[in-house]
Each structure stands twice: as structure tokens, then as C-alpha cells.
Amino acid sequence: MKCIKNETSRQVTFSKRRNGLLKKTFKLSVLCDAEVALIIFSTRGKLYEFSSSSVNKIVERYQRKVKDLHSLNTKQIQENTQVKEGDDINITKKLEQLEVSKRKLLGDGLDSCPIEELQQIENQLERSLTKVRARKNQLFREQIETLKEQEKCLLEENRKLKEKECHKRAEYEDMFAAQHFKAPL
Image (cartoon, rainbow, N blue to C red; front, side):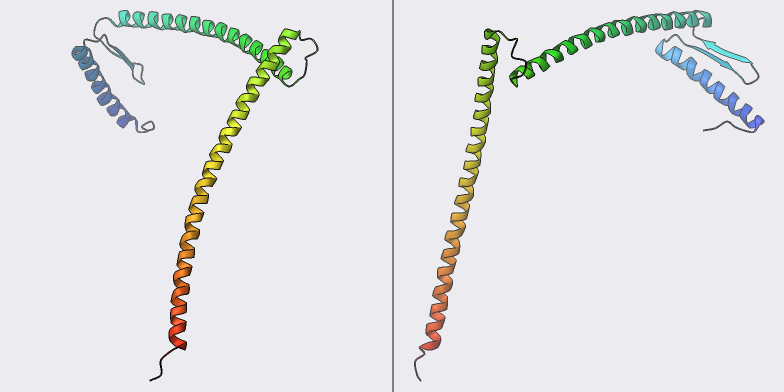
């Protein structure tokens, strides 16, 4: 969409669309019992307006609402910023604690640990090792089951091939016997 170049065509289009817009605004206010204000300035600066009550009252109400929303948004932004800063600090602390815990689980930084903490670390490692072994054993069992199924399939296939081979050998022997031992006429 672009501006109409011809001034006469532009003025005619403006008049038609302005009247249509004013009509739609009126219908909206009547049908929906809405408070509506429409302000239009032409390119020559002429004012056209429609209001279901008073344009000034509606504009003042709009300005109050915008100001209230702006204040509310500013307050929410400040609160969110404070919460996020607090979250960032908490996350940083937790991250540091996890790093220290990780180093201790890897055996680093144990010199300053009391015996109780060392015992907790050892218990944690044993629990983790138990879980790792359980998972590994589960995977081995699943692999064994899969291999047993494959073995069954291969044994069945082998049995069918041997059976087929026996039938072919019997057919060959019958054919061979028939060719070499024909009765004289």
C-alpha cells in the first residue's frame, strides 16, 4: 500500500473512507454500548471527530489509563528485576556449591573435610556406584535376551536350511539313480 499521488483522487478516497470510518465508529458505539472517540485530521489540517459522549472525557480517560499502565509496568519491571537479581545470586551460590561437591566427589579438595563429611561422600559414591552397576547389569540382561532371540531365529533358519538340503539331496539322489540304473528295454 502506498500514498495516492493524484491529489483529487486522494481527496475523494479520504472523504469516502472518512465517512465509512465515522459510520463504523457510530455503529460500534450503539451496538456494543462502547465509549468511542474518533479524531481525524485531513492533510489540510481540518478536524473531523465523533464521540459517543465527550471527546475530552474519553481522551482524559485514555491518558489516565495509559499513565496507570505505564506506572504498573514500571513497578512490575522493577519487581521482576529485583527477583531476577535475587535468583541470579541464589543460582550462583548453588552453582558454586555444586562445583565444590563435584570436586570432592572426584577426590579433590578433601584435605579440609572432617571425617563426617568424608563418610557422607563415601556413602554417596557407594550409592552412585550401586546405581551404575544396576543399570549396567540391566543393559547386559537386555543384550543377553536380544542375543538369545537372535540365536533362536538363527537355529530355526539353520534347521530349515538343513531340511531343505536333505530334500534337495534326496531329489538329486533319486534323479541320479534314475539316470544310471535304467532298466534295459
